[in-house]
Image 1 (cartoon, rainbow over the protein chains, first blue to last red):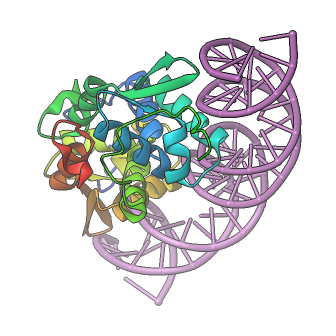
Image 2: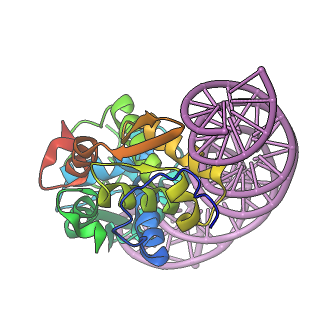
Length: 115
Length: 115
DNA sequence: TCCCCACATCGATACCCATCTATATGCCCC
DNA sequence: GGGGCATATAGATGGGTATCGATGTGGGGA
């Protein structure tokens, strides 16, 4: 029998996280992982539950209107915000339970992420 | 006095989130917003607090060793994991309080993110 | 009906990021 | 001190992403 090479004996108790699972979580996190989208979410949370229209985001963010629409689309596709049309205005509001779920998944004490 | 154009009257109660603040949060989130880094964190949490060495991450992740080192560096620079050298092996462990803090910042019910 | 306004989409561009191979570093054992 | 192993770093590369200006769309008021 050949000599065993020196091995690091980390406890391989837990099986690897599922690929789909990890990518789903990463996709949601990517949606939030942008300074402008963080600011948008902050503002939406502050204005909850009335919602905020695009025109009130463009100026404080300091970016062009198409960019704001772009970020709102990212957040919406991630299921983190809702859109409500009122006349020619579009009001966006945060989906509290989606953000809470994301927070729970990250918290290592509530080990839901290990499911 | 000229006629006021139709305006959306969203409650502009909260001032915009500070730029530095938003970018700091985004930077931390970017560190987690990757499927492989999510898997790494998952494994580190499972193996907490002993830690996991690089060699035990390469194979389950299905990526080359330098890529694993790269991801570990990202997580470490974000303050999310610790590194402990033991002989020629490097053991990485999760910084629970950092992850918890991140989770808290995301949770809209604990409005710390609005600070 | 016509125009204006709010918002979305398109196409282009410049930058960032994850990955690889190749190579350096540092440790341990012989 | 030399060889081999674990890990880190460097450099190159392909794909993704945020941004913009230009343009499309749809509603509302005059």
